[in-house]
Length: 439
Length: 178
Ligand code: HEM
Ligand code: FES
Image 1 (cartoon, helix red, strand yellow):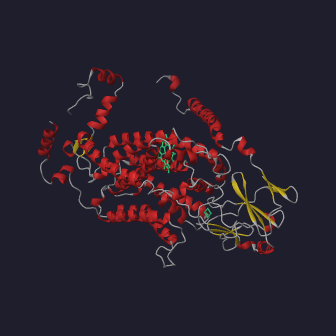
Image 2 (cartoon, each protein chain N blue to C red):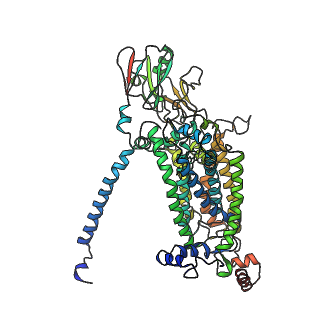
Image 3 (cartoon, rainbow over the protein chains, first blue to last red):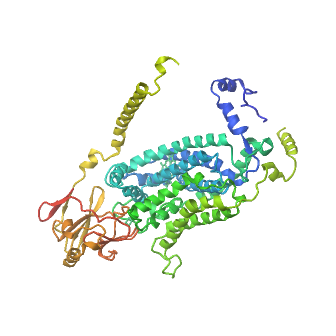
């Protein structure tokens, strides 16, 4: 390591040493983010952890500065956002970064999660790491939902109404819970106020869980595209400079794409209806959530029939929360001892089918249920496609994965990462090469 | 080990743990209560919870919307046809069985909260130009729930009839909701 300002007990300046021996932040950073040994065969999908961290910081930064200009009151909120757009210096930039930032945050987390599913990163010993990730995902959904209410447009209001009403499906106490959430008898000023307070709070909770997520990661070490554990130093490289560099490249590409939307198509992901101020007595003809909620919205709507004593409304809500619940228990549903889908000939196919299924669910969630899927074919409606894709989602997790663990015959795994990466060259030679690079 | 820690079948120490734990839990609950309770409707919100409406200008067959507790309330001066349809409905056809007589104070006037019992959209049908669904009452566009001329659910995902708010006729021309 060249510029050794923060080395453990090393050559750091007097001040750094003085602090470090009282509060070991520098040696902690050095140990966890510089020397941290990571498998040497990461592909680009391993960039998204760094990208997500960047996005969280970006959302908090833009959010705090937006909050300095925003007014959480039903009679002023909409106008205060318009004022941010027109009068506040760079207000348009802050808001478009924040709104598109939410979209790109979700793009990144979805890629990150499907990466985990393809390479089996949720399997032992990384179960808790994975579950903390699902907690982060849930908190992010709650944060984004409440943030979307703040501009107090028509979709803000009706989205909030429909989603808070989900809780009324809970037997006996449902209505009291909804009143408690609203602080009144409909979505109104008390609701907007508390959503603002919580929208400000939750990202910091996310920050806390992210720290736990990283601590868990640094206990087990990272998974890798082969899914076999590193056997020794010949299989890893220090995080810095190797992956700090690679992450920077990926981040630059990601941010460039986001910037293209922020500057050239800032409302591409938005809903025009949300530029109309909230009107509590007029429901828009077609209520849709933001794109990143569409698959879950589709599952909610697809249960439109009673199941035994569970009525359709409660059934839909249970299915929607269940679709995230299965992610929590995923480490115990997938019994196969092999992590990476590259060595699982059958699972590999079902992985891609699941991805397709989720995309189709997203399509279903964005369309009115009674429309035909293909114009002219009247007997096949969006709702039917919803039944099929919702069924498949649960079938994949609850039936297929446990069965595959028993019946699938995996391909032979490589003996080690360096064997697979370097194809026969001796680990000794690699260690030397690494020594030279470091020098 | 000394004598006073050898309390293996546990009576004294366990009792202390349990009672301390129970007191702690009760204390925590008591401390949380004001926080949760502060989220429920406040006195000023509750104070705004009645609305008076002048109904003298509403004609037969006309429907108007008023706001009560932040929610739309539908007032429908029903036509004789709508009334007879509502009254002649067989209760076995209903998902949430209720007679029309149980839902009105005077058959001419139907007063219901205009919030779909599915997920809270405002059903269409207040204006003559709007779709009223297959039973001539209201139609919720969000997930296609149909209500009849008594505001009862007939088709679609909504589980319950449109609720009847508490209201009374103050005189022939005024009602008080809430
Ligand atoms: C996890 C991080 C966050 C996410 C996913 C998120 C998401 C969102 C979304 C989707 C909106 C609606 C944007 C629109 O359509 O206008 C929004 C608005 C807003 N957010 Fe956030 N947010 C995050 C963090 C924060 C933080 C930390 C703050 C404040 C400290 C904040 C303050 C605001 C404000 C004031 C608005 C209203 C202004 C506007 O609508 O642009 N956000 N947020
Ligand atoms: S809210 Fe009316 S049908 Fe869903």
